[in-house]
Image 1 (cartoon, helix red, strand yellow):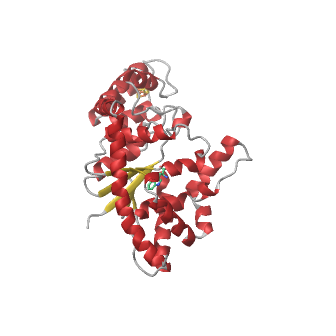
Image 2 (cartoon, rainbow, N blue to C red; image 1 turned 90 degrees about the vertical axis):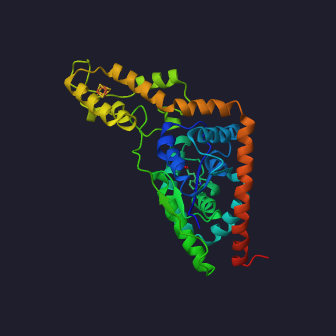
Image 3 (cartoon, protein in one colour; image 1 turned 45 degrees about the horizontal axis):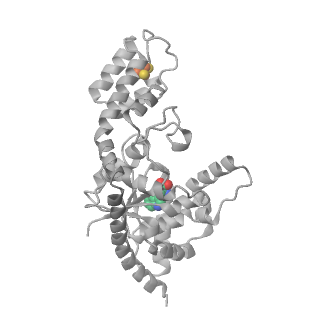
Length: 333
Ligand code: TRP
Ligand code: SF4
């Protein structure tokens, strides 16, 4: 049997280059090697935003459009919406029962999320029961398809560790090696930082969206941090201390381009403004085909909805097989 991957993303709206380089690009390659399931984790969005759901529907569509535009192929992969596969919620119940409370309390990713929530909304904000269940629900997503592998960004690896523990525990409790212990698949691409040098993120307003227009991209790139010690073009530059712009070159440029820029910068023959203008053009060139495809889907929303509905039906069929067996193992009525 072909090995199977499951991965998901929360519907946070239009995706940025960090999502593309860190996760989606990897999925696009892996879909040819694995039986692939990709879903929009709309329940997970509720773990922190249960009271801000006015854009949820649109955000789900936006994420799906970014995936399709980036090359996730609905003919090869199953693309679905988490909440359209209600079997996941039932599996979540069974998994919740076998998961010791201290396993979720120790989850470092969850601790980080809780910390951000507390600083954002003041000391009084409550971490909900649903948020505590984040790693269990995520395990249900993965185990629902009995995946063997989970391609994720490095920040999600701790969650996958818990999933492996939960799978092992379920198998022990119900005395059958039914669930795989899924392995994370990390991608090799170096993480892209935001324009200000911090982690790229929507809420930090330091991101470039897949969907940004070329002019917007070019403008944003002009704000990228460079070598702070450099004031004039003729000042000798230090590419390794060029905090953002040169790092982007290293991600998007060819070996030759990178070498030439390093040389010109170090000799004081390259101005930062020109350097970033070229960089903007390069990034726009790379994303032109993706953006064109995105515009197609934006004007064919019904097609996107059909893809999500069909995919969700396919995912449900798989989920029902797994759930039937789980109910048997647990001795449900
Ligand atoms: N937690 C993931 C994120 O924030 C999204 C996610 C939910 C996920 N369920 C998953 C990823 C299952 C991989 C597998 O990006
Ligand atoms: Fe960075 Fe380019 Fe300026 Fe050198 S010339 S410091 S590489 S932006």
